[in-house]
Amino acid sequence: MFPLYDLTRRLAEDRLDVQLILEPGLDVHGYEPRPRDVAGLAEADLIFAVGLGLDPWAQTLARSAGAGEARVFELGPLMDPILAPHGLIREEPLIDAHFWLDPVRAERAVDVIVEALGGLDPVGGPFYRSRGQELKASFQALHEEMLEQSRRWTRRRIVTMHGSLFYFASRYGLEVVDVVERVPGQEPPARHLAHLIDLLQTPDPPVLFTESQLDATLGRALAREAGVTAHAIDPIGGTPGTDSYEKLLRRIALTMDGALR
Image (cartoon, rainbow, N blue to C red; front, side):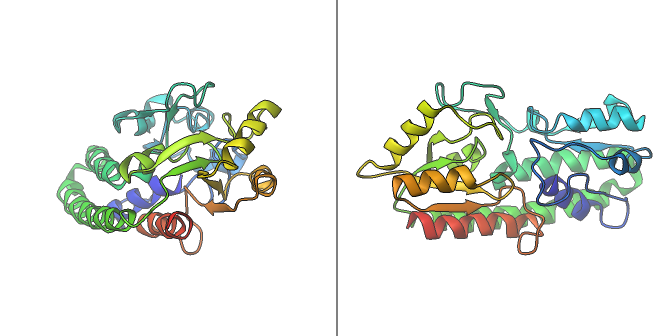
Protein backbone atom coordinates (compact mmCIF):
# COMPACT_ATOMS: atom_id res chain seq x y z
CA MET A 1 0.00 0.00 0.00
CA PHE A 2 1.30 3.45 -0.95
CA PRO A 3 1.85 5.02 2.50
CA LEU A 4 4.04 2.10 3.63
CA TYR A 5 5.76 2.03 0.25
CA ASP A 6 6.56 5.74 0.41
CA LEU A 7 8.09 5.46 3.88
CA THR A 8 10.10 2.36 2.95
CA ARG A 9 11.45 3.64 -0.36
CA ARG A 10 12.54 6.92 1.23
CA LEU A 11 14.29 5.08 4.04
CA ALA A 12 16.00 2.61 1.72
CA GLU A 13 16.78 4.99 -1.17
CA ASP A 14 19.04 3.03 -3.55
CA ARG A 15 20.30 0.48 -1.02
CA LEU A 16 17.30 -1.82 -1.47
CA ASP A 17 14.80 -2.51 -4.24
CA VAL A 18 11.38 -1.47 -2.91
CA GLN A 19 8.26 -2.30 -4.94
CA LEU A 20 4.60 -1.35 -4.51
CA ILE A 21 2.06 -4.18 -4.69
CA LEU A 22 -1.26 -2.32 -4.56
CA GLU A 23 -1.34 0.22 -7.37
CA PRO A 24 -2.65 3.71 -6.47
CA GLY A 25 -6.40 4.11 -6.89
CA LEU A 26 -7.30 0.48 -6.22
CA ASP A 27 -9.56 -0.49 -3.32
CA VAL A 28 -7.49 -2.28 -0.70
CA HIS A 29 -10.60 -4.05 0.65
CA GLY A 30 -11.66 -5.63 -2.64
CA TYR A 31 -8.20 -6.14 -4.12
CA GLU A 32 -7.66 -9.43 -5.97
CA PRO A 33 -3.97 -10.18 -6.62
CA ARG A 34 -2.96 -10.76 -10.24
CA PRO A 35 -0.43 -13.34 -11.50
CA ARG A 36 2.15 -10.62 -12.11
CA ASP A 37 1.83 -9.53 -8.47
CA VAL A 38 2.71 -13.04 -7.33
CA ALA A 39 5.66 -13.23 -9.73
CA GLY A 40 7.03 -9.94 -8.45
CA LEU A 41 7.23 -11.27 -4.90
CA ALA A 42 9.08 -14.50 -5.62
CA GLU A 43 12.44 -12.95 -4.69
CA ALA A 44 11.16 -10.70 -1.90
CA ASP A 45 13.01 -10.83 1.41
CA LEU A 46 10.37 -8.89 3.33
CA ILE A 47 6.79 -7.79 2.65
CA PHE A 48 5.42 -4.90 4.67
CA ALA A 49 1.68 -5.03 5.27
CA VAL A 50 -0.78 -3.10 7.42
CA GLY A 51 -2.54 -6.06 9.01
CA LEU A 52 -5.52 -5.58 11.34
CA GLY A 53 -7.75 -7.19 8.71
CA LEU A 54 -7.07 -4.58 6.03
CA ASP A 55 -4.83 -6.50 3.61
CA PRO A 56 -5.10 -10.27 4.27
CA TRP A 57 -4.24 -10.79 0.62
CA ALA A 58 -0.61 -9.98 1.51
CA GLN A 59 -0.30 -13.32 3.31
CA THR A 60 -1.95 -15.08 0.35
CA LEU A 61 0.46 -13.43 -2.07
CA ALA A 62 3.45 -14.43 0.02
CA ARG A 63 2.36 -18.07 0.13
CA SER A 64 1.59 -18.12 -3.61
CA ALA A 65 4.99 -16.64 -4.39
CA GLY A 66 6.74 -19.12 -2.14
CA ALA A 67 7.91 -16.37 0.20
CA GLY A 68 6.33 -17.88 3.30
CA GLU A 69 4.21 -16.21 5.99
CA ALA A 70 7.21 -15.37 8.16
CA ARG A 71 8.30 -12.75 5.63
CA VAL A 72 5.15 -10.68 5.94
CA PHE A 73 5.70 -7.89 8.48
CA GLU A 74 2.41 -6.36 9.69
CA LEU A 75 2.91 -2.88 11.15
CA GLY A 76 -0.65 -2.12 12.25
CA PRO A 77 -0.66 -4.22 15.43
CA LEU A 78 2.41 -2.30 16.64
CA MET A 79 0.82 1.13 16.19
CA ASP A 80 -1.49 1.24 19.25
CA PRO A 81 -4.62 0.33 17.22
CA ILE A 82 -7.84 2.28 17.75
CA LEU A 83 -11.04 0.38 18.44
CA ALA A 84 -14.12 1.91 16.85
CA PRO A 85 -16.65 3.12 19.45
CA HIS A 86 -19.06 0.41 20.59
CA GLY A 87 -22.22 0.34 18.50
CA LEU A 88 -20.75 2.33 15.62
CA ILE A 89 -19.20 -0.53 13.66
CA ARG A 90 -20.65 -3.90 14.60
CA GLU A 91 -19.01 -6.10 11.96
CA GLU A 92 -15.38 -7.21 11.81
CA PRO A 93 -12.87 -5.71 11.78
CA LEU A 94 -13.67 -3.55 14.78
CA ILE A 95 -10.20 -2.00 14.75
CA ASP A 96 -9.37 0.87 12.41
CA ALA A 97 -6.31 -0.16 10.39
CA HIS A 98 -5.51 3.25 8.84
CA PHE A 99 -2.86 4.21 11.40
CA TRP A 100 -0.82 6.24 8.90
CA LEU A 101 -3.46 8.99 8.93
CA ASP A 102 -1.93 10.01 12.25
CA PRO A 103 1.57 11.50 11.63
CA VAL A 104 2.61 10.72 15.20
CA ARG A 105 1.99 7.03 14.59
CA ALA A 106 3.73 7.35 11.22
CA GLU A 107 6.86 8.42 13.13
CA ARG A 108 6.57 5.21 15.14
CA ALA A 109 6.20 3.25 11.89
CA VAL A 110 9.45 4.79 10.65
CA ASP A 111 11.29 3.38 13.68
CA VAL A 112 9.84 -0.08 13.08
CA ILE A 113 10.71 -0.07 9.36
CA VAL A 114 14.23 1.20 10.09
CA GLU A 115 14.80 -1.71 12.46
CA ALA A 116 13.44 -4.21 9.92
CA LEU A 117 15.60 -2.83 7.10
CA GLY A 118 18.64 -2.96 9.37
CA GLY A 119 17.92 -6.63 9.92
CA LEU A 120 18.00 -7.22 6.17
CA ASP A 121 21.07 -5.05 5.60
CA PRO A 122 23.08 -4.62 8.83
CA VAL A 123 25.81 -2.66 7.06
CA GLY A 124 23.20 -0.09 6.05
CA GLY A 125 21.85 0.25 9.60
CA PRO A 126 23.41 3.69 10.28
CA PHE A 127 22.15 4.95 6.91
CA TYR A 128 18.57 3.82 7.63
CA ARG A 129 18.67 5.36 11.10
CA SER A 130 19.89 8.67 9.67
CA ARG A 131 17.17 8.68 7.02
CA GLY A 132 14.66 7.74 9.71
CA GLN A 133 15.55 10.81 11.76
CA GLU A 134 15.03 13.00 8.70
CA LEU A 135 11.62 11.47 7.95
CA LYS A 136 10.50 11.74 11.56
CA ALA A 137 11.47 15.43 11.64
CA SER A 138 9.41 15.98 8.49
CA PHE A 139 6.42 14.14 9.96
CA GLN A 140 6.67 16.05 13.24
CA ALA A 141 6.65 19.35 11.34
CA LEU A 142 3.67 18.08 9.35
CA HIS A 143 1.82 17.21 12.55
CA GLU A 144 2.44 20.64 14.07
CA GLU A 145 1.28 22.31 10.87
CA MET A 146 -1.92 20.26 10.78
CA LEU A 147 -2.55 20.75 14.49
CA GLU A 148 -2.49 24.51 13.97
CA GLN A 149 -4.74 24.10 10.95
CA SER A 150 -7.22 21.97 12.88
CA ARG A 151 -7.70 24.66 15.52
CA ARG A 152 -9.53 26.71 12.89
CA TRP A 153 -12.11 24.01 12.18
CA THR A 154 -15.43 25.04 13.68
CA ARG A 155 -17.34 21.87 12.78
CA ARG A 156 -16.12 18.78 14.60
CA ARG A 157 -18.55 15.94 13.87
CA ILE A 158 -18.11 13.82 10.74
CA VAL A 159 -19.62 10.83 8.93
CA THR A 160 -17.17 8.75 6.88
CA MET A 161 -17.67 6.30 4.06
CA HIS A 162 -16.14 3.51 6.16
CA GLY A 163 -14.08 3.29 9.32
CA SER A 164 -10.92 4.97 8.04
CA LEU A 165 -10.63 8.28 9.88
CA PHE A 166 -10.59 7.36 13.57
CA TYR A 167 -6.85 7.99 13.91
CA PHE A 168 -7.04 11.32 12.10
CA ALA A 169 -10.11 12.34 14.09
CA SER A 170 -8.56 11.37 17.42
CA ARG A 171 -5.36 13.30 16.71
CA TYR A 172 -7.07 16.48 15.48
CA GLY A 173 -10.11 16.81 17.68
CA LEU A 174 -12.84 15.42 15.45
CA GLU A 175 -15.60 12.94 16.25
CA VAL A 176 -16.66 10.20 13.83
CA VAL A 177 -20.35 9.92 14.68
CA ASP A 178 -21.15 7.22 12.11
CA VAL A 179 -19.97 5.45 8.97
CA VAL A 180 -21.89 4.71 5.78
CA GLU A 181 -20.52 1.25 4.94
CA ARG A 182 -19.91 -0.67 8.14
CA VAL A 183 -18.47 -3.38 5.92
CA PRO A 184 -16.48 -1.73 3.08
CA GLY A 185 -18.01 -2.42 -0.31
CA GLN A 186 -21.23 -3.82 1.18
CA GLU A 187 -24.34 -1.67 0.88
CA PRO A 188 -25.82 -1.03 4.32
CA PRO A 189 -29.41 -1.98 5.19
CA ALA A 190 -32.21 0.48 4.47
CA ARG A 191 -32.70 1.18 8.18
CA HIS A 192 -29.12 2.37 8.51
CA LEU A 193 -29.43 4.58 5.44
CA ALA A 194 -32.60 6.13 6.85
CA HIS A 195 -30.77 6.77 10.12
CA LEU A 196 -27.93 8.50 8.26
CA ILE A 197 -30.34 10.74 6.36
CA ASP A 198 -32.01 11.76 9.61
CA LEU A 199 -28.58 12.42 11.14
CA LEU A 200 -27.51 14.57 8.19
CA GLN A 201 -30.73 16.57 8.37
CA THR A 202 -30.40 17.63 12.00
CA PRO A 203 -30.01 21.37 12.71
CA ASP A 204 -26.27 20.98 13.28
CA PRO A 205 -25.46 18.03 10.99
CA PRO A 206 -22.13 16.21 10.82
CA VAL A 207 -20.05 16.61 7.66
CA LEU A 208 -20.16 13.73 5.16
CA PHE A 209 -16.96 12.40 3.54
CA THR A 210 -16.65 9.91 0.69
CA GLU A 211 -13.42 8.18 -0.37
CA SER A 212 -11.73 8.03 -3.74
CA GLN A 213 -10.95 4.29 -3.57
CA LEU A 214 -14.58 3.37 -2.83
CA ASP A 215 -17.63 3.79 -5.04
CA ALA A 216 -19.00 7.21 -4.10
CA THR A 217 -22.45 6.61 -5.63
CA LEU A 218 -24.06 5.78 -2.30
CA GLY A 219 -22.42 8.70 -0.51
CA ARG A 220 -23.53 11.14 -3.18
CA ALA A 221 -27.07 9.73 -3.07
CA LEU A 222 -27.16 10.22 0.70
CA ALA A 223 -25.94 13.78 0.29
CA ARG A 224 -28.65 14.56 -2.28
CA GLU A 225 -31.37 13.02 -0.13
CA ALA A 226 -30.24 14.89 2.97
CA GLY A 227 -29.52 18.15 1.16
CA VAL A 228 -25.85 18.31 2.21
CA THR A 229 -22.48 18.26 0.45
CA ALA A 230 -20.34 15.13 0.23
CA HIS A 231 -16.62 15.91 0.45
CA ALA A 232 -14.20 13.44 -1.17
CA ILE A 233 -10.95 12.41 0.53
CA ASP A 234 -8.19 10.01 -0.44
CA PRO A 235 -6.87 8.08 2.58
CA ILE A 236 -4.23 6.10 0.65
CA GLY A 237 -2.67 8.38 -1.99
CA GLY A 238 -0.02 7.60 -4.57
CA THR A 239 -1.72 9.54 -7.35
CA PRO A 240 -0.58 12.90 -8.78
CA GLY A 241 -0.81 15.45 -5.98
CA THR A 242 -0.58 12.76 -3.27
CA ASP A 243 2.66 11.12 -4.35
CA SER A 244 4.35 11.47 -0.97
CA TYR A 245 3.15 10.86 2.57
CA GLU A 246 3.25 14.55 3.41
CA LYS A 247 1.30 15.51 0.28
CA LEU A 248 -1.33 12.89 1.12
CA LEU A 249 -1.91 14.25 4.62
CA ARG A 250 -1.85 17.86 3.46
CA ARG A 251 -4.46 17.08 0.81
CA ILE A 252 -6.74 15.57 3.46
CA ALA A 253 -6.22 18.59 5.73
CA LEU A 254 -6.99 20.93 2.83
CA THR A 255 -10.26 19.09 2.20
CA MET A 256 -11.06 19.34 5.91
CA ASP A 257 -10.41 23.07 5.73
CA GLY A 258 -13.02 23.47 3.03
CA ALA A 259 -15.55 21.24 4.77
CA LEU A 260 -15.18 22.12 8.46
CA ARG A 261 -14.49 25.85 8.56
